[in-house]
Image (tube, rainbow, N blue to C red; front, top):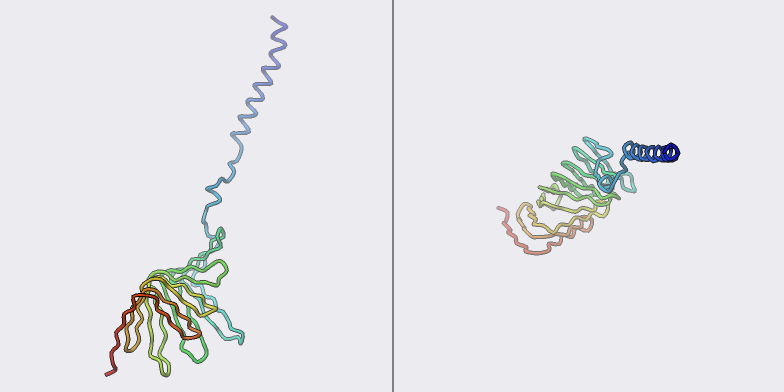
Length: 190
């Protein structure tokens, strides 16, 4: 009996030591980020009272984008804006200003989406009256002077009120295309 205990005791001790080592390794091991960690959408920076100016080739401002708050997310390189204000400047024309409750800037910065109570205005100039446009969603390509939406819009100037669903507007060429369900009312000046 003494010989069997002498043989099985070291083997049992090694098995016990292996089990304790395995248990300690599993207990102390740090959890690796799983798929839920990869899907996190945390901002890497937040800027309050943000303003950026894009200059033209001649050094004058082409447009200014500002917001009360800008939040950038590195996982998808997206930028969210609170109360964005986008103003485009063109020589010989009144500035065109667009405001909204919220906005998104594409990851490459070439597209701005205005969301919620979008209001666009152009002041009166020489032969053109002041103009306002309202909608709830507007996609803007500031470098190209293009704005579009597939949502209802209302356009108002001194004598005209036009409603439509969808619009494509090229501010550089001055072409405004209304896409569907267009209705208008014109009132003569008194």
